Length: 345
Ligand code: FA5
Image 1 (cartoon, rainbow, N blue to C red):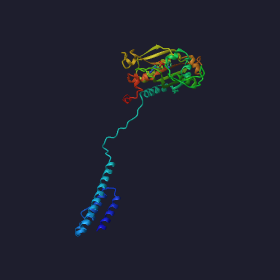
Image 2: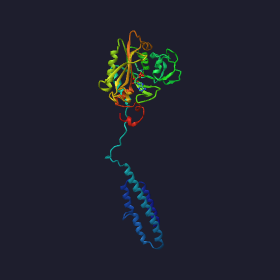
Image 3: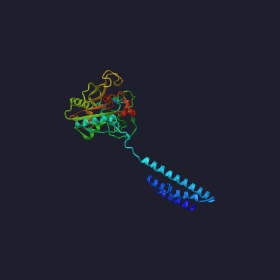
Image 4: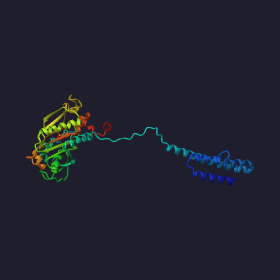
């Protein structure tokens, strides 16, 4: 009988290994442990034994029975656990996936690029690490000219050998997008219509309307007989494209060595509606769009004959324009990296 018990134990353990679902497990349980099961029948036969035999075989039978019960129990829970893992409740709400989005400066830049493309302007790029030649000299700002102090510059030591009035020059982080003007003239000649959006850098203290790193968009149009009226028409179109309505503007004379005459176009502060607030430095207006007729010296640096061609240029303060469009009262929010701010766009 001992032999019989060992054998049935081995058979059961062997069969159990193959089981993968609960129905087969139930059948097997019934086959061996059911009322008429094979192991149950052997256990019942124990009553026929007597004395020492009954004690010895009885103990073995009990151990085997418990062992088999445990094996079945463990297998049952492991099959149930697996079933739970595979269960998908299709009625549960789905996981929300985070969607990326564009930065407000990119949004306004894209809008402007569309406006200018529709007017036949190319969209150009220029280096942010720029030579002094393109950033200053080619724009009619020679070395030691007091106008260099108008923009606080980050100077980078380098061995740039761009050919300029001074020959060899050092590198700067471009202080404005105007260097792209001369690069574009040299590359494409006249007639020319282009805009050049991009990041610029100035070594200055920050406040609600001043950043050390901000965006501008340069605009340039050169052809025969270009006049100030063309410039005003394009500037109006630009503002209408961004704000979708006529904006209240004011125009003042402005001095930039690379234009003559030069103007400053301000828009009425959209944060306070002109009532004066920190975002417009308590003036009711925000300086946003300086412009002017391209200086003949700049045309010459670009390889364009100033006797035949004339043109206008502007240097839009893109970050300040975004402040006005979206009603943002502090320029430092754009580069602050605060997701609560950025997620609103
Ligand atoms: C220039 O940078 C000239 N290159 C613009 C120009 C181009 C004039 C072509 C004529 C023809 P300005 O330094 O004023 O000019 O800067 C242009 C615009 O950039 C300003 O009107 C303002 O809107 C924005 N801006 C200037 N400094 C800052 C600053 N620190 N932070 C944020 N925006 C600024």
